[in-house]
Length: 150
Image 1: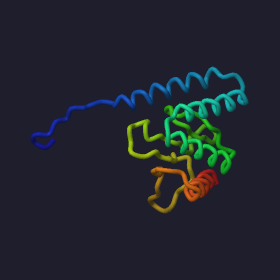
Image 2: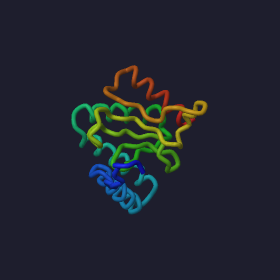
Image 3: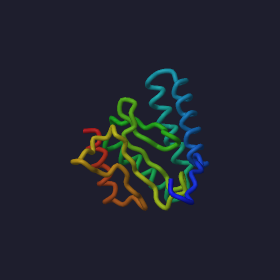
Image 4: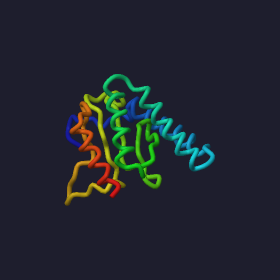
């Protein structure tokens, strides 16, 4: 350790702790659901409710992202993941929308997990900043999601 440097561990931020608590609640709720059909329908309702809770541009972008993802890749199942709208294939989250407000960021994010088939050589993007969802952005999201599940 360099002289004068502190190794004080700050721990998780309040936002990170809240996201972990949301994830635990999501897991418990999913485990209590009866049938697969009930789980899917209720999970989508949970996603729509979470989107409806968002404010301003985050909500508008999340609504558009949800519409694009569900249209472009109907095989993906909407679900909440750490309190964020997410879309899973065979139970594994492929992509998710993170509102700017979630972690007090200056932009929302469309992220892809390792289940997404976006591999492009030795390095490729897995997260995209969103400041608005235009027709051009919708087309790019549709292409990415389609590739992610191909």
